Length: 414
Image (cartoon, rainbow, N blue to C red):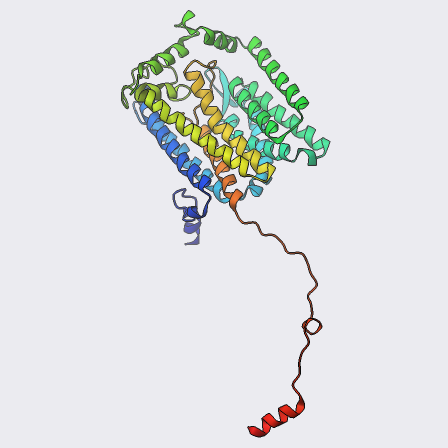
């Protein structure tokens, strides 16, 4: 019975004490569920034709996504219940373990290659993508290191900067420039929020841009992506094909959209329509009005994230809120920017929308971290009283003793 009760706590809808949470925590929790629900609805529509054609099962991707959602909600609920001081203690262990898995993907025969990139490890029927799972732990460890920057020894600082650099280098070698850029920008913005010297930040930013330029000069497909972004119509059937089809999907949505399930571009015109370009399907089916609703949801989420960060008196908690908001909202805007032609084509998924169990788990964990910060901002703190020597009663107050004659008279009356 006790085991059943403990397992029931993992159910994210069974929280009976949410009304004691802060307003920001409750709003973020329900906005996360709303965001997740909309994402599942859109994924069902976007993935059905591909699943039916390739696996004779239109629900193939949707059913596998539900497994990722179930695992992600368990992680989400655990993060909501565990104090952040415990998560910070284990963050470095998970970070180092996932870093080792990232380099395992580079060993021939161990990593699984898809679309020219080796980012997955095959463990059973569901592949593991360490570069996705490491994102929330980068936020936790980055917040701790930069939040305690001036309290740490120089040796500790340098060690963790080298570890962060190894994470970015390992992801870049897969190759995965977009995820490398996202992780690098997240760490850099956390450092900016921590108030590190601008000389360090400027040098780091210059090094990151230089590394990206070198990568694009070496990898031909990355260079073509950037050039095709400038003018996708110059080669609409080759390098500019993805962006052209995405723009056609977004533009054909009109004001109100074609209707749920009625997208035409997802019928084998738009590539990887259930992952990188799922927003294009959403825009075509729900139109301009649907896009405005989604953008308002993201803006509301970002506003609440900023409010939570500004309310945090603990610098580490404040930086966790900043990093989690960047992972969720910042990555969403990057994905939307790619789908609408505002940014070069990248392989970043849309959080809580795109197909992929690893991305779903990482996104829900990031949402849990943000809500947990909101909870801890308003929790009562036990302030220890100063140790004082107890005062003896006889030394503080004068004890009045009754006279002996009065006691004898009282006994006679009895």
